[in-house]
Length: 455
Image 1: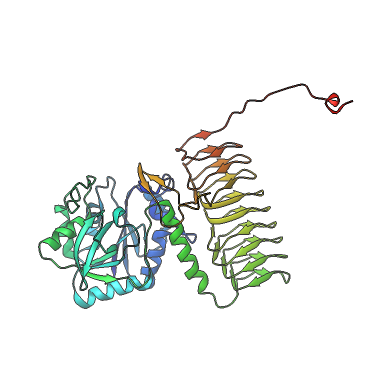
Image 2: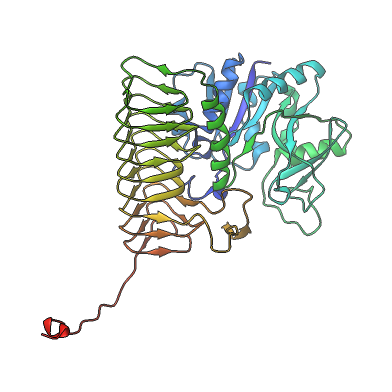
C-alpha cells in the first residue's frame, strides 16, 4: 500500500476559537501541524502518494507542503461530509488500495504501519480503533466484537466501546461513496444529526448488509482533536514522546550552553541557539534555531521551543509546554500549555492554557487554574454543555488577541480572534470574535490633606 488520503475539509466549528483563521488540520502540536505529523509518518513508511482533501484555507496547506513531492491537494469547495470529501480524491487515488485518515487526528506512526500491514495481510476493509475514554456521547463510536466492527452509532448515549482513528480500504470503496446518505441514520431514538454525508454512516450501512469491517486496536493512544482542550491533551503526549527520545545533548552548529546553566536532563539545540547564564532546566527539552534562553530562566521537562525565541529573566515554563516560533517569554512570566507563533509574555504574568498567534498579554495578566470548589469548569461548545475530562480549567485565547494590564481570566474562559480584554477586567465568560471588553469605574473625590492628621 503506497497511497493515503487525509481529510482536511472540516470547518472546525467545535474547536473555536482556533479554526477561525486556519485549517483545523494545521493546528500545531509540539510546534508542528497535526496533518504534518501524519504526512511525515507516512513518508517515512514509504507512502508515495498522499492526497490532502482541503476545504477552508487551502492555501495554508499548499504553502506548507509545496516542497513535498509525494503530497498533492484536492479541493472540496463545498464540504458536505466526510464521505463526499473522500469521493473528491477518487481520481487522484486511481483505484489503488489506500489509507483514509482524518486531518485532525494524531495517530502514532507505528499504528499507521500496523493498519497498512493488517489490510495487506487480510485484504479486508479495516478500521483503526481505540477504546473510548469518557466521550461516548460526543463522537461517532462503534462496538467491537472478535476483531470486527459489529455496529457503528453516532453520538450514542452508551453501549459503544471504541472510536475511529482511520481506515484502510480497497479502491472499490469509491463506487459506494455517491450513495452515502446526507444524514446519520445509525443513531439512537431521539438523537438528532446534521445534514452531512458521514463516511462512518456509509460503513454502518455496509455492516448492516453483511459486509465485514475488521477492527485493529491501536497500540498507542491516538487523539481526535475536536475541542480546544483536546489540543492540550495531544500536545502533552506528543511532547513526552519527542523529548523522551533524547538520550544525550545534541547541539547543532553554533549552539552553546553556558557552564553556569544547571541542566538535569538532555537538550537538543538548533543552529545558533544558546542556553545562557544561570538557566535551570529540569528534564529534556527541544529547541529550534536562533533561540536564546537567558538570565535565570527556569524550564521544566518535555518542553518544545521554536526558532527565534527569547526566553529570559527568571521566567518559568511548566512541564509539557510548547512555545512557537518568534515568541518572547520574559520577566517573571509563568507559562503552562501552548503559545503559538509571535506571542509576547513580557512582564510578571501567569498563564495556563492555549494562546493563538500574534497575541500580546499586558503586564500582570493572570488566569485562574483552580476553582474554589476544586471542581471542573463546564464549557459551552456550539451551545452544548461540556465538562472536559482533562484541561477544562485552562484558558483559551484565540489569534490576534490583546489583554490590558491586570486583566484576570477565570478558569475555562475563551476569547475569540481579534478581541481585546481591557485593563483590570475580571473575565468570567467567553468573548466573541472581534470584540472589545472593558470595565468602567466610578471615581469619587473628597477633600483630604494635612488637617486629616491633626495639623
